[in-house]
Image (cartoon, rainbow, N blue to C red; front, side, top):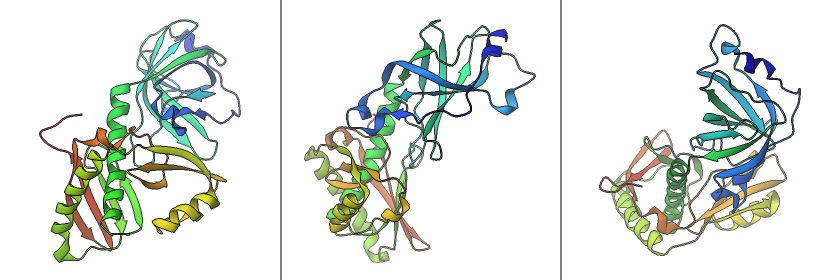
Length: 281
């Protein structure tokens, strides 16, 4: 427990350089030399616990970890303290829009762990889990592209890209007698888009330029929700939209996925999708 007594944290820290925001960084799962800027402990674990199994929260100047948000689960992985070669397990990463800082919520499994502000660490994202979450997120965007190709320009509401029941929601209802036919057509369009092997694009765009480009085609994005001057725009299967998640390189990597159903209720249409039962990622 004595080692944890040296933990200290500055009052304010600089925003995290989030590697996943760029196209190249979207595929980076390991980064050495990440400087510790902040260390803290959850309030409920400040007193009366052993060092082993406790949690500490870390912030760095740069990180490859994608935090939970935008309908996508958080990355998991490990942090190696370069000075001591001790390993911490990252259980979850979260992001503050107020400070633009990614916090890494870690478990301490060694009683003598020694980590200090100013230390450098190697951050390792679990690459298999990252790929799985990227596939689920990209498959959700594939639903958007398939819907658009089929002539359904319903305004997007939100996406849930977790493996336990992924869906994409749209404002508006599909007529009852056309719903099952739509599911059939979406399944077919999924196959077509996968076979076309369309590369994913990721870039930062000035908000006004992105709004003009996207609403010239899709005509269904509300850019008043974005406060920053630039917006991250992701294109999956040639369908572009604002997005902060991680993605696969091409539609060909989504051959395991298909549309599984549709639900319309209270002015919202939900399209369900998932990995086909006979396949695995």
